[in-house]
Image 1 (cartoon, helix red, strand yellow):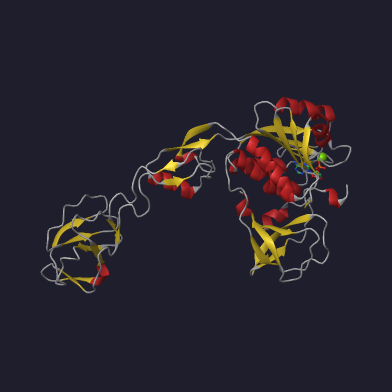
Image 2 (image 1 turned 135 degrees about the vertical axis):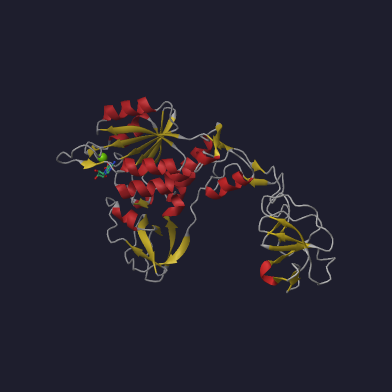
Length: 401
Ligand code: AMP
Ligand code: MG
């Protein structure tokens, strides 16, 4: 197939997202906040509390009524620690107060203790002026009851879950996990823990993808390894097509005789994508097999990694209702020359050193180690050359999890 017939990456992503919209998961469940990391919120989280719930002190110091104060030392009428409910401030006095403690009624400013002196008679002398509201965190400064704090479709990480906890939530309503059957193809594959036979290699894609899928909120069904055999491949897909939302496979999608997965998908399923303008990862094949979509990633570890991160990831997030599926990326000057333009868009394993992108020396699609060395993927567009100092788009790996 000529380079011009390859599908551009954007077009492939567009099609996958369109497919994902039609396959949005409808069910949701309530899960404990402690177990909700990486899940996607199914309904807006609406505040039930003002935060802070009452005005409180931002400092250790003394609370007073600034309007009534004549600048003279004040006696201390009460002490308020965080966690206590204060009494109203006695006029003409100040209250010893600590960070996080509620402001007594009648007080409207806090002077930090560094700007005070305790006199021999116990009164407090203020060495600096203060304004109404000084060092007070007003009620509702962060949010008001009724505010939408988190939106349906938002992924839940430590920050979002802490927001839920601050409202007193023990549980959050999240979209059910996508069920993904993970299937490796290849006669050469054996699982770690089994002795290697001549000609065999250990299955690394299964480990790569099962961890990555879990990080994207998926339930992984380990479908094992299928040999390069058309009949067995078809039977395996038939067996897996029920009770899964996606069959994710690696290997067997190029145009060789042993590439059975692609053949079965094209002959017994409905192909949607095949042959992308991407390097590594050109043979990525996506199709529908009976009721279930099948995403056939190429077997080379770097190809599987790039296509999963750039194409399968947005799909898996979108079926869970996530809107913001595009990874954050930024332009970065490159620390190398790229004199030969490529006909496919390349995603190079690159590191940031001194503000410039440098490449892992071996960019072969069969090399996995480059990804663990790298900070992310550097995108080189089709038919582009680069000189040192030119900029290219960099996608940090942290944005792909
Ligand atoms: P394929 O896409 O099946 O043509 O495989 C391309 C290359 O990736 C071959 O060298 C395979 O041995 C290798 N490969 C395929 N699947 C895996 C896997 N699960 N783990 C590690 N390497 C793999
Ligand atoms: Mg193979």
